[in-house]
Image 1 (cartoon, one colour):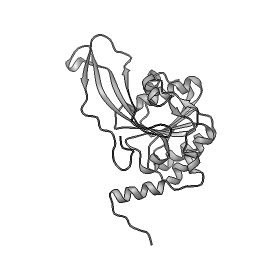
Image 2: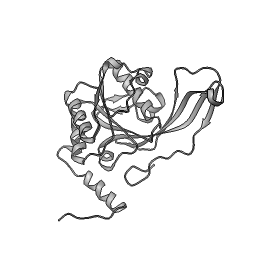
Image 3: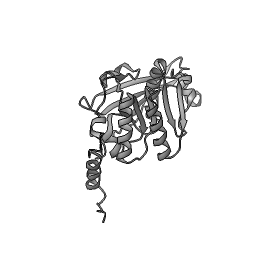
Image 4: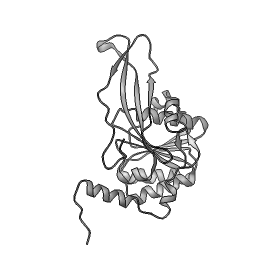
Length: 252
């Protein structure tokens, strides 16, 4: 007879304990390798000790328009300059923006998938091919056994499996080697004010929520400029940043 747990902290604590059980080779596979994938942003790479680890799972977390896609584009630009990368696309990918960020689209394999099972299967196939330095996928709700398998495949392929989502759930939070929280801190407007102004760029505050080989809490500020920026820039600060501090994530 299944045991029913009350909602709230007790249930979340139970789920975290369940995710932490040794599932075959899970405990060995969650630890990152020694090779690193730089993000292309110097301050962020310093905060990460050189970049994201290959052979492991990394997360980019934040609300929509939080800057996580810009960091992903920086990682893909570097990876496609050196070799091949792949992305599982649930419809959110915009190739022209990636090309504008320096991603070589002819070296990026895009696989469309809609539901959680389809996304997991696509990531599984891409990792088993061992052809890519980075495989990107949306963060979806999967069982701990599935994340364990994907972590093991990433380890064997020496590939960075990068997930994008609002907030990592308990299972992914356990198996991820590095977790990064993103938020827009400041918006830059170019040229005239009013309805004719243009977006000149924005500042991202990225904070390390979890790091297998270093204490979390380091942060970096990244300025991303649009390609059409010119003339006078006006800055406007964004409201208070919210990073995750619930029981499902590592507190800051």
